[in-house]
Image (tube, rainbow, N blue to C red; front, side, top):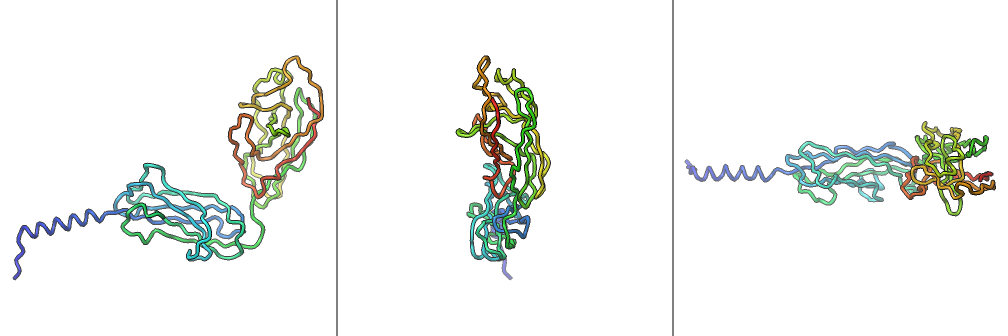
Length: 307
């Protein structure tokens, strides 16, 4: 019979405990990967929802990251192009059982031929985090590209018409249309611009008085805005009040005529634009509210008799 000493037994138990302690690691997996829609045309918008889960027994210790790429086959064996990438914020970690999620709106590459493609996500793509299992970090879904033009909204201005003169303003009706194949979700603005140099002009939802114009006072009116979604092929008429005065920060009238100055009426070319992407006079950023297949056909010129 073999006799094991008490000291040897104690050493073995301690060694096993140490091994059990050091074997605790995070284990990152792709817990969510889906695209909406799953069938579309080349160049169209798709939404990619993805998530990383820590299925291990220890926290990650640092921010988790993910890449999502496009492959020429459904199994993700032949890389084509990167689609999106994200990571947790600095200082963030994933506790055991915790999950980090992301949603990205992107455009499918326009050069894709019709066929079945793979979209694959990789958690911890740079192997920055030591894991219990490094072989379960990947998942793939399919995207079918069908023949046809890209699907997107496309806002245009069909007509600009003067209704009447009100105080120092011109009451103007602007007819817009969604010439695209997807709805244009509001709200988005109708803007007016001076040509050469291009500067934003005042176009608001209430009249401007002669006194306000002469004094260069801030205007309390709101912008002319389409709030409701515009379906493909649908049109809408919006009415606003236009003044040929440069709009400064806070809708302040930048008026170069001034009190007591002459105010001759002349014909001037004005560009009206739906879903404005140009910055205002103070150079602050303006986001295009609607993603469109063509961002360059949003203008409609009009010659107006203004001061």
